[in-house]
Image 1 (cartoon, rainbow, N blue to C red):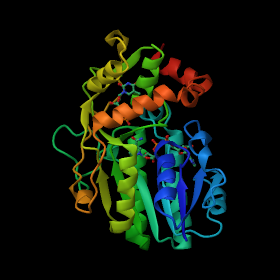
Image 2: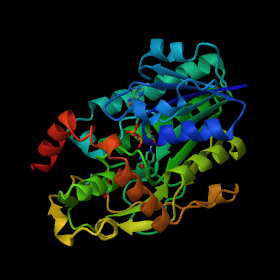
Image 3: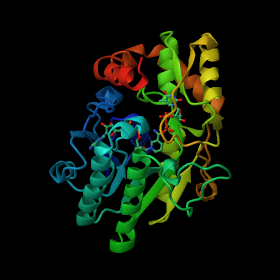
Image 4: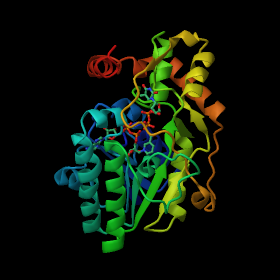
Length: 333
Ligand code: NAD
Ligand code: TYD
């Protein structure tokens, strides 16, 4: 059995990777370590209760005691998905991002080093390159993060690399573009806009709506991470992009049209501070290892919209309490 720790497994991408791992790798014993912050949701993993190769540990990656408890019984391989992930929240208050994304990664690296793990996969992001006016970022490009979220992820990315260069820890670093799909917390733009549209609420589009993101369907990301682990080289970075660059206005109109909602629901609002204009990745390195994204954007967005339309019981309880407080304060609605 290969003993695998997946941190942040109750979140959006982490929960998809946990399901993918258990169905794809028969010989993996999976432990999830998750603090269950506002973004972590036990419902994302509830169908796995009682699974013989799955264990859930509630804990903080920034606590060495919690990490050691999760690693009891040994460890071969670690995927670090756990993070504070929302750019807007990082602009409001960066502290939790430094604590989890930077110090938490340090804590995991130390624990991994003490146990001589065979692979440490650090889930980084294309946002570490900063805004890219033209062309596509390559793995060797300089990092130029421009908000507290991306800066804390860049720190973790390079800290992980330093454990490879200094101690020989087998670290693999992935930098994926914007993910979308079922179970994404409805503060990120696609689930926010889909759920708002379903409730006939305004869709708050920042600035001029011309910012560009490259959309990657979440299960394609999971497949790419297997390629990084199984075919990648320790110490290397791998870009993972969907090859679907879209302007935010296009996505907004597509969501409204698909749900047959009026364009009048579109509401231009004040721009995000320091809003990165465009992210774009050159993915030739991981494509050379045999990975390619399989989900065309039109198919992925259709599947995503249908999922939110038929899983109101997943997102309606989230859009209450703390969420509404954040929403009203942030959007001044
Ligand atoms: P998410 O916000 O949906 O989930 C984060 C998970 O981490 C939650 O389950 C939360 O409870 C857990 N967590 C937070 N702090 C923790 C702590 N201190 N200890 C233990 N668990 C903690 O995030 P996501 O969108 O699934 O992103 C997962 C990873 O992928 C992150 O590292 C993120 O930076 C990276 N990433 C995300 C995207 C994207 O588009 N969502 C793109 C590229 C990279
Ligand atoms: P988001 O989903 O927060 O991801 P990220 O900032 O990490 O790329 O935002 C995606 C894009 O959508 C980004 O350009 C900001 C924009 N956006 C809006 O226009 N309105 C919103 O309410 C949100 C949350 C994002």
